[in-house]
Length: 288
Image 1 (tube, helix red, strand yellow):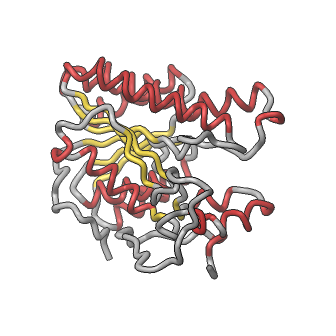
Image 2: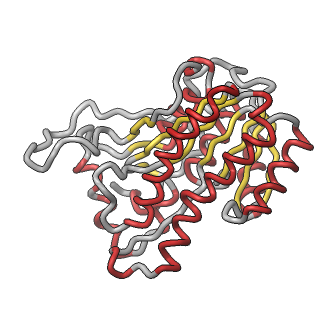
Image 3: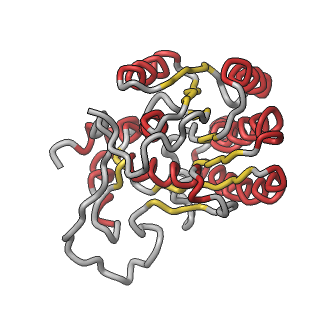
């Protein structure tokens, strides 16, 4: 089996794409789709075992893939990583700025170290990678960047540190689109809502019942798939989005809209798209 992308074959042939957080979840899925479309994919992450595993999958499927271990929160490490990718593969044409992480906690119990760690991961790290890709490559060749946000439009109760960081990344996306547009660089973002991804299994046991009920709060009455996020990312990277920059696409089934005063109807016709042949349903959703 191969990735069942809706985009035309070889769309990214001859293009090098850097995917941070490419060893798992949405990053893994997006890397597979881009590789299936002919891209040279470079996976970036902190854990070598995850990068090697995903790289092995892509190679087995016939894709072109490499990987670099890097903590994107460390400026010198990011500079060196980007330089190494350029030295080995040439210009970086596209960046999927996906790496991130957070943990559930109310604001009153988050200490300074915890808050700063999440902000460094979800905002500072993304800035460092984008800046170095621009300075070392895209400022000369042009390119496209897609940053990762989240459904933080109504605040993020229980994850205020991540909400603050994601909101900052949304503003960074707008600013970079203006400052880097002269070089032919487009900068956009995607904001996934509740997605059936491996990250769901990282949350504590106490949250599992809530996770299983998430679909009941989505107007489309279901959880999204990694493929649905990947498809939006691929579109924003593609030539079809050549005049789109500084925008954020919500991929949340309209969950970020409406109000509690409106009762959602019973679910019907709630079919999703899943083109990822190696997708794995999170354990927390099995049996649903």
